[in-house]
Amino acid sequence: MDTAPSPAAPWALRATALLHLTVILWEGATAGQLVTYNEDALPLHYYGAFGVHVAAAAQVAAAWWVWRGAGRGPQVPGTVLAVSLVAFALGFGQAAMGSYGPLQAHVPVALVLTGLVTWAAVLSWSRELRSLPAGG
Image 1 (cartoon, rainbow, N blue to C red):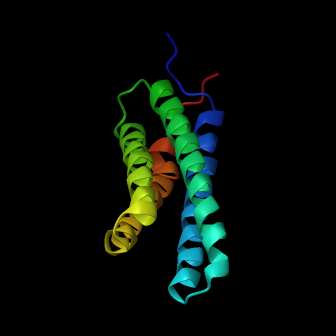
Image 2 (image 1 turned 180 degrees about the horizontal axis):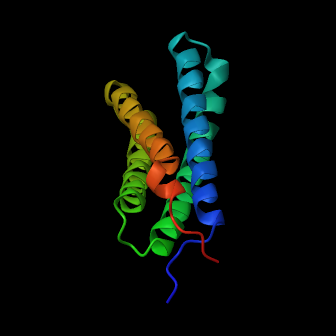
């Protein structure tokens, strides 16, 4: 059985990781507006959270596609899948803290989430993923 990933799989992962990072940065920008008491930013921040969850789910799907196609063995595809899954799950907890929990926890967890998503984006462009054999 040919376990080489589709050539589209790494590109899907890169695109979804960059999309996820973009919406995370959007959330940071709108959060900054909220800290300065610009309440007009609240709906932008609120609905942006839905974008975070959609992008995170797409990133998990793309990471799974790469991991599955790479034979489930190489370290980087497994790591990026694990990081993507943690970011996906943490995003829901972080959003819940923003709506129902202490904002003192919401902000630091947002920084951890930003780090995880950045890590996944960096891994998606790693040498190991670029050197995976192209299959079809």
